[in-house]
Image (cartoon, rainbow over all chains, first blue to last red; front, side):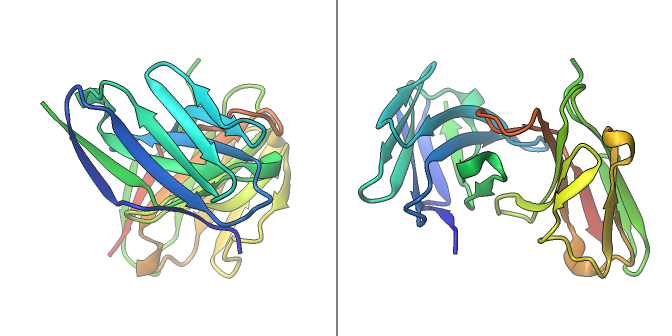
Length: 111
Length: 114
């Protein structure tokens, strides 16, 4: 079946460090992924997306890397700030019909 | 723009009681989704509407859950009767058809069944 999973449930970093959140997927036909940020008491918020015809995509302080060979993607956050503390999900949005979310990684940023 | 509006934000009910959640999507968004998010997990799709038609309700427990989207705008999700295992956050999201960028989510309704 289709699944999207994350390697680590919690990631603790110091303010100013770079953070890397990993995600594995199982469906080799998946071709579109989205990273979401979810703060406490709020719904998931779009961060960045990537299509399978790309290996890398950059946004403001965030970079997503996609390795289709090993079915793995990662979210890199540069100069992590306390406001980045949240749960991060990767989601498969192949075909735009529905989002399939992974379990999530909690990012804790300490000053 | 107000975004996706959900109410209530919190609801505590006793098991076997009915409960309803309401969602107002972003104006002009024809596609509406209800997701359920259990503690520590990612959201899971319950039902997807294209305008007023439910086009994917395969994950909706139809023995106790029902949903409607009258006039293709607002939507309600109902549980009757509620069970302890229904405790979760119920998220509504909307989009303009199939599109890149995913959906816009509301803040959700946190349901506690006691």
